[in-house]
Image (cartoon, rainbow, N blue to C red; front, side, top):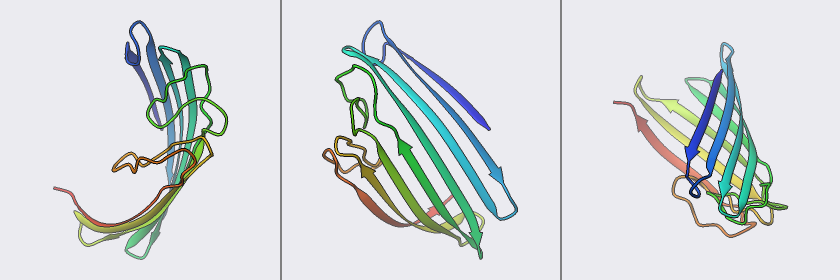
Length: 155
């Protein structure tokens, strides 16, 4: 289990503090691992408050020497009276999104593995969620997707 709390002083605007909380749990079966996470973000901007709840679940299933990985994320609609966009979210109707990821990891050694995955974000009509790394700069309602093939080595 994990529990985290963040406090950012004067982050969005002077005199106002932002905060966030995350709670995560994970359970390991002999060949399966399941995890779940809840996140609550609360920004205090110059025009008002902005909040969002997020949920994430994942499953890792050993399959032969490798493992299949599934993930599902849900970002609720942003709420509050703020007019700013913070990161990928803002307040209002249809500003939420879901993301689905499926992948496979294949170990070549204790320190090296090959991996592949596919991921898609389904934005509601006013949502602008994008990938955190190498974002695509999506417009409202767009549904970005990605496919990756790579190698990971731990030094």
